[in-house]
Structures are given as structure tokens and as C-alpha cells.
Image (cartoon, rainbow, N blue to C red; front, side, top):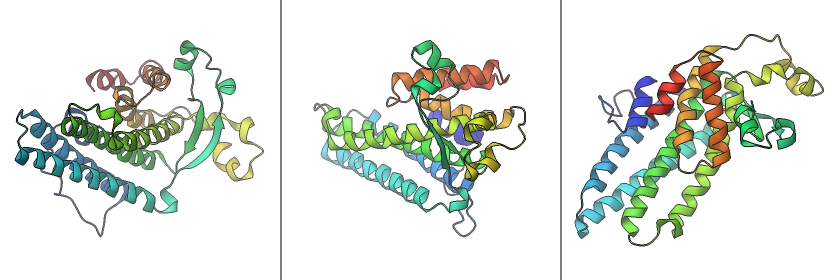
Length: 266
């Protein structure tokens, strides 16, 4: 997983390429999303190399346009795969939390809130949640590549007026919201809500079980996702404030100094 993070965050090409472990017949949830992440790393490196060249002759523009198609095709593959994930590995919405319940009427309170106003999701386990978030970050990076390519191809037209930008913006907003909705699960918020959910028989077995102390590994697995959200152009200021607060919480309250290191590195 650390190699996947480095590949996506730093724009490094995978040392062994993206196809070295592809096995369609035996692909698991985590291996499939990591395969997509490696392919995204490759496309990011190739895109950066193409856009770094100053010439704008027809042949080069055709290469850039072809790269745009490759990026979009990979994003469509990731989206289609997420839609096909078996029910046993899907998340479900635990609840919706509004601003009054979260008590986030200021930036200071928002940075300390355990839950961002809106949806809160739960997963079969935190490894599955991590796989979903790897796929989400992959889509966010592919979206950024689409924006970079669109800006290059449409210059001097403002890329924010293009159809491509409008489509990418919609994808990013939904993806960021889904990733944020997974964070309380990683940090064990759901295990402390017995009274809130005791009237719901469908959730009582999960939510009202024996409360365990906060675990470091689930928190560790969401750090990279939070760092990527914090640095993404489509993350709004309220979301960024909350994400920074969660990274600070993981570092200071859970003792995972990695949260500060990776947040500053991304």
C-alpha cells in the first residue's frame, strides 16, 4: 500500500509497471483497486511528460488528445468496477448528521467535529473501506489529469467553462463527499453511538456491540486519503478545515505522527 501511495502522491511511475500482478480470475477487492491505482500512476507520469513539452504542433496535440481518452477510459473502468462490487463488500449509510447535531457553526468547531455534516457510512471492515478510498483517490487524480489536459488543449479558453470541467467537477464533489463519509468509521465514531441508534433493529447489532478502544490501524489507513482530500482543488474550504482537524486528531490523540508527515508531503 505504501508503494501505491507514493506512486499516486508523488507522480512516480510504478517500478515494475502496472500490469505485473494482473490476474482477472483471482482479483480481490484490494488488488483490483491497487491495479487501477498503478495504472493511474503511469498515466500521471506520461501526462506530465507530454504537457511539459512546449510545442503545440498537430502531432503533439493529437498525442495529448489521445492521453485524454486514456484517462477518461480508465476512469470509466474504475466507476464501472465500483458499481459491480458485490453486496458483501459495499458500504451503507448509517445516518445523516446536520450542523446542529455536529455543533459546527464556526471553523473552530468544525475542525474539532468528529463528523462532517452530512452522510456517515459504515463498511464490512476497515480493509474494505480502505480499498474503496483507494479507488476514490484514484478517480480524484484522474479527474485532475483531465482538468490539466483540458486546460492545455483549450488554451487560451478558460477551462472552467468547458463541458469536461463541468463533468469532472460533478464527479469530484460526489467522490470527496463519499470519502469524507467514510472517515468516522475509520476513527470508530460509530461504536460510541449506542443511544442514537438503539431504536434501529437493523443497525443495533453493529452499533451497539461491545465498545472497543480506538484502534490505530484503521486510522492509519485513512491518513493518506485525508491528505489527498486536503490537497485536492475540488475540496471546499469547510471540507478542508474538517479534514485538517481529523489529521491533527490522528496525530495528537492517536499518536500517529505519520499523519503530519504525509499531510505535509502531499
